[in-house]
Amino acid sequence: MKRIELLINDALYRQYMKYNLEEEMEPKFCQHDFGHHLDVARIAYILVLEHNDLNYFIKECGLSGRLAAKEVIYAAGLLHDIGKWKEYKEGVDHASYGAHLARDILARAFFNQNEIDIISQAVFEHRNISLDMSFLGERLHRADNLSRICSECPDLAQCPKVELKEINVSGFEY
Image (cartoon, rainbow, N blue to C red; front, side):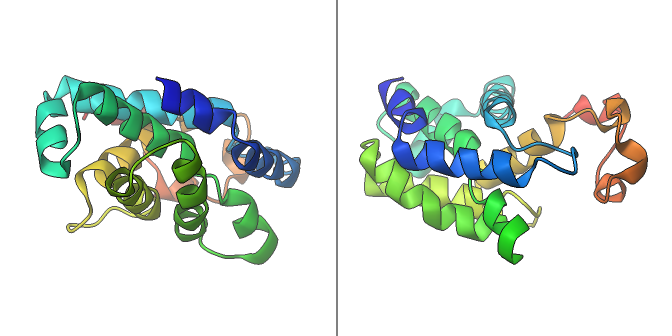
């Protein structure tokens, strides 16, 4: 996946990931580091494969084939929290801001305009589930939630997000 390699080696991507790390020094709740981004990318791809939705996704989004679809899914996962640092600093919605930041990175990694629109929309939508969200936005939302086992978190008692998430492993069923 050459475009994914370009994405993760992009100077802006690395800078924004560094900003996330700097802003998450304390508290140590859910970290939005590369490991989390990669987990979400992999889980989103698995969700698509497990439900035999890859061909649907390719056709529905007008993608060129299986590799392009995989790269689009991975790019969305790798970029979904790219704007988290800005939320910490200024209180802006990280999903909306991240969708904006993603566009420049994606263009430099040779994603075409259609793919950039699909990925940016999914990044924008990943935070809140809704009836009218895109296919990839919904898979990204689910993957993000499945990426963390809150019941195993040492900071569970102090976590401000705990009431918003399913904290048992039955949440792994989809």
